[in-house]
Image (cartoon, rainbow, N blue to C red; front, top):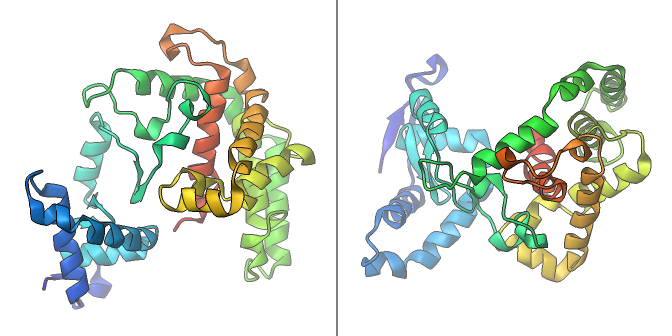
Length: 307
């Protein structure tokens, strides 16, 4: 049983946090899983149990308070949801600035490789969050695709759209929705696809990043159908993704992905990409659009709701 006193916050200076039996066992088993020799039979036997622990903790690991409590119990670096978590600024800075080796995971969640862009639709694999950098096992693809994305989608025109009258009108509409829902007290401000925060994110992000018309209801309907109604983020996840695809969405998922990818490809931003550039590893408009569908699914449309 371990305990840590939080000396960084005056409000919690005298509070002692202790790990229960489940917490201690779960932490030990995951340490064993991450550090064991391939010849450790005991660790291999326990892998099904560790997988269940990982799945259980993955739900809580999306909450900052959950991870903060882990930090108070186990210290600044700890194991949770199948991975090692760093919480000290120097460690985080060092790992972010150095070349990173990446696998098929998004924070605590395991990704399913078969649906990641753009190989899932017959193009080259370009999913940035699973490509390693040079110096960490990568071959340069990450650097080329990342540069192409930044130069195409986060250029000067993006900064101009960020502050123009259209963006101001969308922010004003969000403020009005906030007021009409008792200043965000009503759940509809956060859950309604056609008003409030979700409606704002769909219109604002796709206007600023891609240059799409935020008032084109046909386009917005297709985007909301994929990202909201069809839970596009879960399409990428192992276990829950295949289950939802089998029992609910079936072939509708990849079909809707291609519909939205085509919208992205024909947007003012991506349609301006000059294909065949060596510095971009000859990235095509189709490849970039498919990559961005996944990025918007996992970050743009979900990230703001993750606390």
